[in-house]
Length: 238
Ligand SMILES: *Cc1c(COP(=O)(O)O)cnc(C)c1O
Image 1 (cartoon, rainbow, N blue to C red):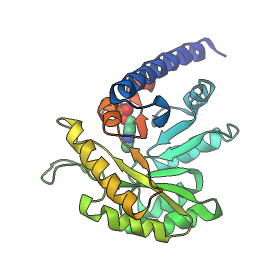
Image 2 (image 1 turned 90 degrees about the horizontal axis):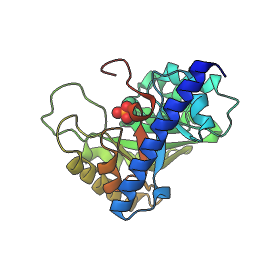
Image 3 (image 1 turned 45 degrees about the horizontal axis):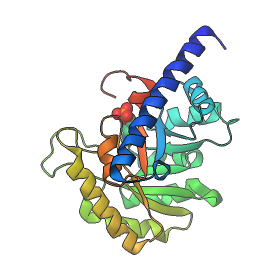
Image 4 (image 1 turned 30 degrees about the vertical axis):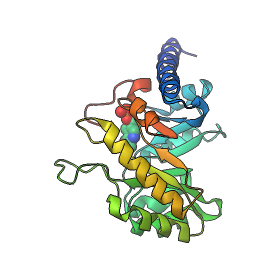
């Protein structure tokens, strides 16, 4: 390995160690077992060489937020058979089928129109999906971070269950940019309970990123999506 590759490996190792320690402490405080929380390392804007280093460091789950970038990296890492690829970004309808061809899990299903293309792209392999809930306050300004209005979530979850090939696993949410993430994650947990009433197998709660993973673990997250705390800062604003 080149010298810079070695340096990058050590950076990633340190980032991972820090995040795993934060997760363990948060689980301790919440009285949860660390094995209940899956770490998805969000590699968007970082190269496939980083995905390979992460795989060597025993990362099993990686996340991408854009179709073309994710598809390319998936292809470049095709020999790493045991990686699970999560799509966490906003999903365009005309790309949904293509995303379902490389992704193993889609976290960002927020409208019924995505379901048929996702099922088509998933084919016989099927696809794990999460319904994304909009956790912004109703009067939020600024760009939407995606997500179905909370009032629509149970209906949408039921519709996922109606399509063969799509396996409803649970819900996903992104805390609002400002303020305390805890109330938003509490609302997400409440919706997760309602979804489980119609689909008992849908036990996943995808919540928490670099800045708020402790609050997410406290609220019952089963999956955290962490990028910058492990890989470093992305180009600004992304
Ligand atoms: C980029 C991204 C993340 C990771 O964010 P960090 O703050 O870098 O940890 C998590 N979830 C989604 C949906 C993202 O787009």
